[in-house]
Structures are given as C-alpha cells and as structure tokens.
Image (cartoon, rainbow, N blue to C red; front, side, top):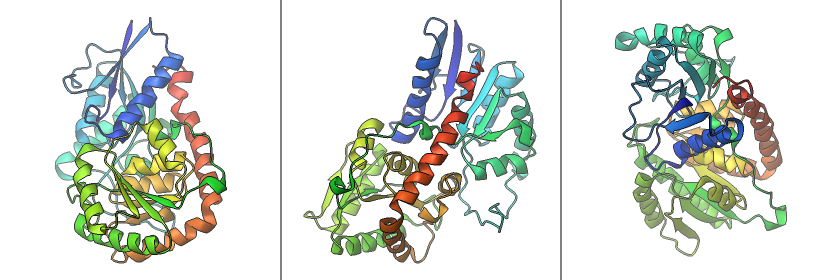
Amino acid sequence: MKRILYVGWIGFNNVGDELMWLLFRDLCRAYLPDKKYDVIPSIPGVDIRNPGPYDTVVLGGGSLLIPGYIDIAYQAALKKKKVIIWGSGHDRQEFPVLDTTGKVEANLAYTAEHAGTNEKLAELAALSDFFGVRGPLSYQFLEDSGVSSKHAVISGDPAFLLPAPSPLSASKRSRTIGVNWGTAYNRIFGGSEEKVEQHLIEALRLLIAQGYRVNIFSVWGPDREACKRLYAKLGDPQNVELDLELHHHEDLLEKLKGYAFTINFKLHASYISAAAGVPFISLGYRFKCVDFGLSVDLSDYVLSTGDAQLCASIMDLAGRIEKERNTIRERFYAYQIRYREQLKIPFEEGLL
C-alpha cells in the first residue's frame, strides 16, 4: 500500500485550512483505490519532518511556501519521495506595490539568513512531480527565487474545487451582508486591527442606514472574541446578528448564497463567498489576499487594511457590487473552471 502525507496547517479548527484538506481527501477518494493508498493528514502528533514512512509528500493549500515547510518538501525530494506542491502560496506582511505590468516592484526572493532557501526552492521545483501555486504573486516569488517557469504553474488555491450550491433567484436574495471578522494579532497591513475595525463599523452603520442587515460570522475559534467586540460596538441588535458557530464549509456555502454580498477579513471566507455566487469585499490584510484577487482578476475588490480611507473604499465597492454582480460571478467561475483542471492534474495523470 502506498502512503501519502498531506502537509497543511490542519487540526486547529480553522475552516479554510480544514477545507483544503477535505477537498484533497475527497479527490483521493474519487481517484485512488482505498486498498492501494493510505492518505495521512498532518494533524498534531504526525512527524512531518520524517518522510521515511511515506511514498509521496504533498505540500497542500495554505501559505506554506516559507522556509520551514519548503525544507520539509525539499528533504522529502532528496530522499527520492514523490513530491507534490498542491496550491500552496507565499505570504508576507509587506504590502505588494505593483508596477504597470502587474508585477511586484520589489524582488521577492529571500535574503539574509534565509537566502539559502532560494536554491532549495529552485531544486525542489525541479525535483517535484507537480508544482502548483496559489496565485500570480506566489508565482513571482518562485521566479524571483530562481525557479524555472517550466517547473511550476499557477494552479489556484484548492478552494477553487468548492462546488457551487444551487443558485437563488434574484427575488430570493436578501438584503443581508455577511461580515467575517477576526484577528491576525495585528500582523496586518497598517499594523492596527483597531483602526480597521473602526472603519468597518462606520461603513456598516452607513450600509444599515441604506436598508441592509448584517450577519457577523467567524471561520476560526480565536476570531470569536473579535466578532463579539464588533457586534457590541455596533450596538444594533435589531439589524445585526452575531453567529459564533464554526460552520462546515458546505453549510457556510448554503448560508452565504442568499446574501447581498460579504465583507471578509479571512481569506477563505472570500473564496467561500465567491463559490456561493456572492460578491465579496476582501479586507486584504496580507500578501495572500492580494494574490487571491489577482488570481481571479478581481483585485479591485481587495482593499488594503492599511487604507487610510477604508470606510469610503468599502462604501464605493458596495455601490459597485450592485451594478457588477453578474460580471463578478462570471469572472470568478471562469477562473474556477481553469484552476480546477490544474488542481486535478496530479490525480488524473497518476502523479501520486
């Protein structure tokens, strides 16, 4: 029996990371016979630094293209294990300033104490059986690190495999805005979640005055306190609902599909919203959020948390969404189809 190790940040009750593992598991069940393959997720207690017991090591979805995880995959490749990079991404806290071609102006390769990671990454890409990254900024990180273009592709985030729920007619769509709030412990663009929260409160009060209702939800346990605080500060129980349940992604898809639009702090809340056919405004707090927006040509709907006029920017996008709803949905689904094909390559071509 062949053993596959799926490496991701799982076992910590984060809806986005658990979602990507479950999508990988479902593809394994669809393509790989149970009697011939054993798939092991990297839950706490699994030694991901020892590739010895496994035939294949998969670096899964999430911001795993960082030194520690790169080294795990690199060591597995050196020991002649099959290595699959499956929709992994790069992340950092510096806001990516883009030039006229859509490239980040700064060189994204590692320097100083992590400079050796660049050579490892280039060698890892050459040795991997499949190397697919989350978006164009993650791909530029590979290029700047010396990875040959023939060794990597933009596969999209594994969340593109989410099935779209049955659509609602326009007449059944509510005037509810889904608001995902949480914390990254101030490791965000701008460095202050308190300032972002105040902008968000101002925007939500304006939207409520326009006749919208608000549903606040979280996608990670530690986000609940931030959600409670936002709810209390809004002080409007007639128009604002607080949902502290961590929904399974399928339930969250159904929950969101009737909403007017969503405003999301965490990355995968925006993926789930888009998969449900609901326009999103991403409170882009890190590099990965910009990567997502660029990957589906919807970067206008990713706002930097460092934006000094964030409230006004949210209101501007809320107005645009009313006019561009169908365009947003069609654009996302077009990219989703393309990325689904890429994400299935390791399974359809027997690379595992």
